[in-house]
Length: 216
Image 1 (cartoon, rainbow, N blue to C red):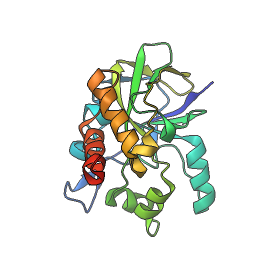
Image 2: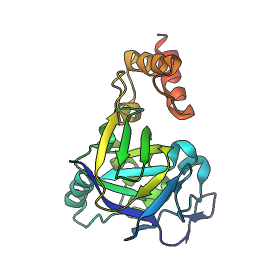
Image 3: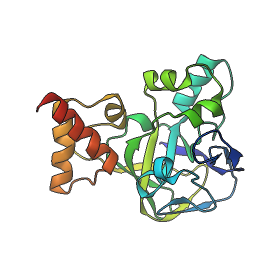
Image 4: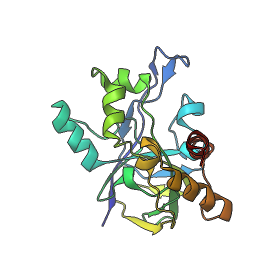
């Protein structure tokens, strides 16, 4: 059964060379249950809400399996929170979640919905301190998933995760990141138009851009 292996929130705000001037990427595990509402975990901070926050990017989840791969690749530990994630999971391929897939977590009513991939940025690169990090992360495309909060609730390490809804269009977070095909772009937009899913503005823009480029 998939489960949450760590719940992380901001440990401290750090100065950053980007336009915002600070970053909340320094997330670390907490022991106690944490309430999750529409804009994310209680007492967490999104310093750059335009690019890394808001209701469609309220929670960021990353898989233990992908973190272990990176640990072997980099020759260093990748502890929970290093990538700025709120949830570290096991048994659930976060990068391959279907857009609009819903996860029921624990027994306190929390339901999250996969919305979009994480796009690596310069702040992330400075955090990791590896050469060509943005390109390397993008090439692997194990992005993890941003999630919106469908139903508020509590989350704690050890909570089970049930995939309680999976849309029929089948397009994954990873496929959005690497670039959907014309058929996938149509499937996403059709699912949105029918009400099966509610696409984020970013994913909708990606799908329209693909179709415009291909004249499809």
